[in-house]
Image 1 (spheres, helix red, strand yellow):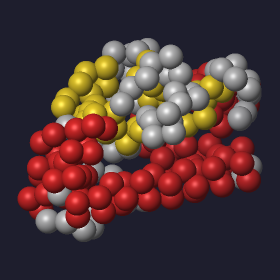
Image 2 (cartoon, one colour):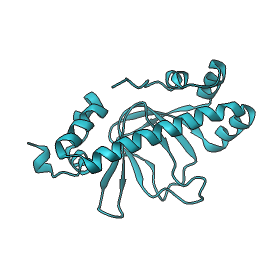
Image 3 (spheres, rainbow, N blue to C red):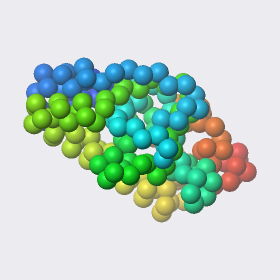
Length: 185
């Protein structure tokens, strides 16, 4: 598995398209934010207008609708978090919380739009980020929904690396759709 750059600037520079200068200009627009363990970053009642890049820490996305507190996704350094429904004029349908103290980079959508208007070719960077996120979600969903518990467990280890052991057991069991009893085996 290829290591994902955990620094925003490194990550943007690793993407295809655009000049180095445009990538550096975009990276400068992001602001560093420190997040405390347990803090909600995205929720249906918090209408954020930002794109986040995780530099340090772990996050989980979960829902209270179907099965209480079911972990739908885990996020690690190098991942982007996007506000769902921003351009559909509806709030996010899920919650995203920090599982540990974290450092993220944040840019507001209006600021990103102004940058894209000024540098239209930079939209290719945004499309590359969205495509990368979509591919990762597709692969993750295929494994989580079509594989055995052992394969799901191995996928989580591969994805999270050393951070696997920092995820609370009940969150991991929920994410892998296995009981705590089976997880402890």
